[in-house]
Image 1: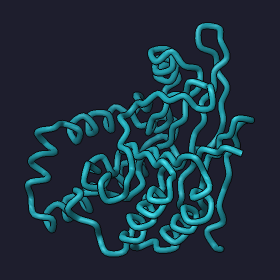
Image 2 (image 1 turned 90 degrees about the vertical axis):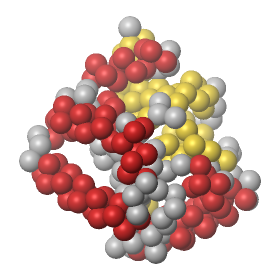
Image 3 (image 1 turned 180 degrees about the vertical axis):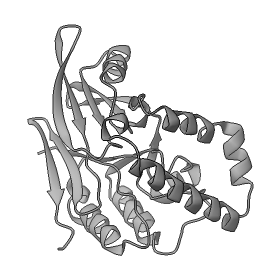
Length: 243
C-alpha cells in the first residue's frame, strides 16, 4: 500500500552515533519502500552552512542520496536548528527544499506542513531571537565567517538555548491554540503536521465549526519517531534505538 513518512527533530550530532545509525537503517529499510519522506526540520543539532559537513554526519548525506537515487521523493523543511540548509545540501542529497509552511495534497486530504516553532508565539524571547537569526543580512554575515568561527558561535548558541529552555515553563514552549487555528484557517485546510515541541500526539480541534486535526511528530533522543500516512489513515510509531 502507498505510504508517506514524516520525521522531525532528530537533532543529529556526531556525539550521538546511535541515532545516526538508526536513521540510516530507517532510510535503507523502511523509507526505501515509501512513496515519499518528509523531514520537517531539526534534522541536525545545528547546521552552519552547506560548506561544512561535520565528520560523522556523512552517512546521513549518503543515505539520503541513495534514497532519492532509488526513486523515493524526499523533502526537507528547515527547523530552528538547521535553517541554513540550502541548495548545496539539496544537490548533495536529492532532497527538495520546502518553505515553511507548505501545503500538500496527502492522499486526497489537503494538509499543512510546518516545523512548528512559529506556532509557539507565547515564547516571546524565542520569537525575537528567531527574527534575528532568519534575517537575510544576519545570515549573509554569518556565512561569510570562517567555518571554525561559525562553529564556535553555533556551539555557544546551543549552550545558551539549553540554559534558557531549562528555566522556561513548559506551556510557554508549546504551541499557541490561536496560532494553530490561524494557520489552518489562512491556508484553508483542516489537517496540520508539525514537529518542534517534541510532544508526539494527534489532537482534534474545530475550525469555524468544522473538525480539524493537528498531528505532532516526536523527537529522536531515546527512540526514533515517525508518522506513517496511507490512504487508509495514519499512525505515529516509535523506533527502537537499541536495535
